[in-house]
Amino acid sequence: MNFRRFRGRGGNQEEVSVNLTPLIDVVFLLLIFFMVSTTFTRETHLAIDLPESSGEVLQQQPKQIEITISKSGDFAVDGQGLVNGQLDTLKRALGKVSHGDNKVPLIITADANTPYQAVVTAMDAAGQLGFSNLSMTTRKDESDQ
Image 1 (cartoon, rainbow, N blue to C red):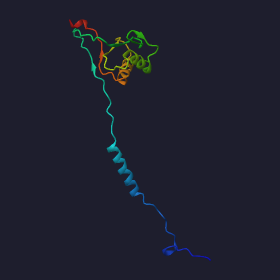
Image 2 (image 1 turned 60 degrees about the vertical axis):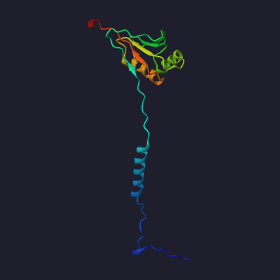
Image 3 (image 1 turned 30 degrees about the vertical axis):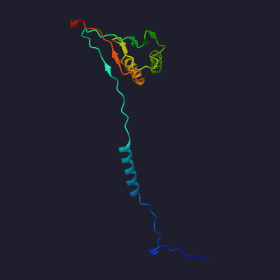
Image 4 (image 1 turned 90 degrees about the vertical axis):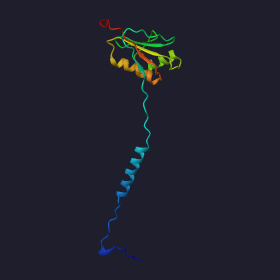
């Protein structure tokens, strides 16, 4: 049996189309919803206590950790030289010396001609380990007398 297909008015077959406007509206609403509901993490900032070079002597803490950075960018933690200047090596040395106590005062002593990246690496390692009591040493300005 041969059935005839209905082709609509005029004998032409109508094109089937999907209206994408509601779909685009829903996608924009979802985008706005996720943008508004996303929680933004607040980065922790280091509390840096830079001693002034006015000649006042700061009272020395009973236990403190000192990171020394040479002119060439080599690191030493409490007088023990490190094999390289990588961030992971510095973090391991700081963790070993502090025994996990990040409340201990941390002092960064760098040569005046130390590359800035080496000082930033030391500060980054301290920040990642949670040290918040950070100081940088300076010398008294001789012309300030």
